[in-house]
Amino acid sequence: MPTASEKNSWSCWGVSANAIVDSGESIVFDGTISDIDSSDDFGDWHAQIAFQLDTQNESILSLSTDSGLTLLQKDMIRGAYARGEEAGLFTLFFTANFKRSCNFGQMQQWGETGKSYLPSKTDKYALRFYAVVVWSSLYVRSVWDNVSGNTLPTTPPDRYTATFPDLRTPLCSTLRLPNVHVTAGSHTALWVAMMDHQTRVMPYPSGRRLIVCDNFYTRHFLASALLRFTDGETCLLGTVRLNLGDRWNKVELAKAMERVEQTERDSWKLVAAVEPISGWQVQQEQRNKQQLRLPKRSRTSYVGPVSIVNKAGFVVFKDRKVVVFYTKDLRDTVSTVRYSAQVGTLLLAATTSVR
Image (cartoon, rainbow, N blue to C red; front, top):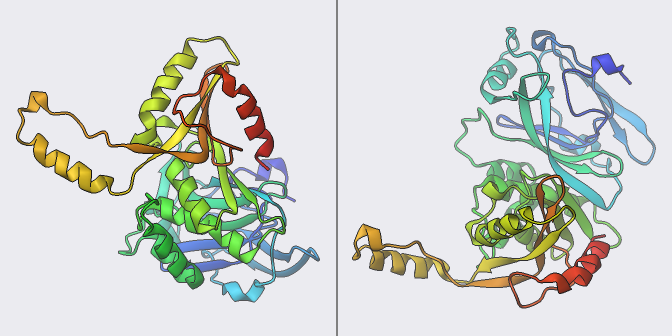
């Protein structure tokens, strides 16, 4: 393994992947990168990537990327897999010095247009990838670029399902369900496909899998779509960023956060997750037409009826600051949107059931 001083260009370290596939300008890692080495200068950038079979820890292929990522067919190492029930959906930052000139064509253009500025990082510029990572072993099961700088007319889910065609029909069928509120061409649909991919390729004997996310990914509609797409096998757990949440849950969450902010440390409230009822778009359109007849000062925004989602909720917790957690694996839910102190028993039951 490289020394600590050599770990300064790539921030995903010691993870693993099965294959690299190029679909247009989309770079896919699906399985096990065991060793990465790169230099500070992006112009001299290179990587040693060893693909390994998990069962025998035997290197079956290594490659050098001095002139860009070498293209491989994913079926060359179809047998590679990773074990583990818990996984995470995160962002991998491949950082490098983009200010120096690069001389390897497509990677130069892609790197310059797809880079992100990260003021809080040591290396200020990076390429971002979405990654599904096994929690225990840090194996990467699926990686996909975040489309920054990608000018292709196709959507991220289209490019992903073009690489893994078996996902296309189930994904489209799931997104057409009336109780799934995820747009077909969105990044959220891509994340659903990425997390489902491990369920189909590497099913776990217990039939249950937990995905842990940071607050950029954790969203109720994503969790609901994932649960339906995986036939109830995969649940989502993670912290929540309020400004990325859906409008149906934002109001109650904001109120709960204000109340918890006024309490002492270690206080909490549990808020049920809700979804709009089927056909809310028609009701909203009809109401908007009625609002046009009123003076602007008299118009109000549409607030449609919602239903409480079974076994889904938000835990608003007061630590040094207020933190919001989401889970789709509560043991039970009750018929009120805001819970009282009596749900302390319910919360303990929920935390022990998230396995």
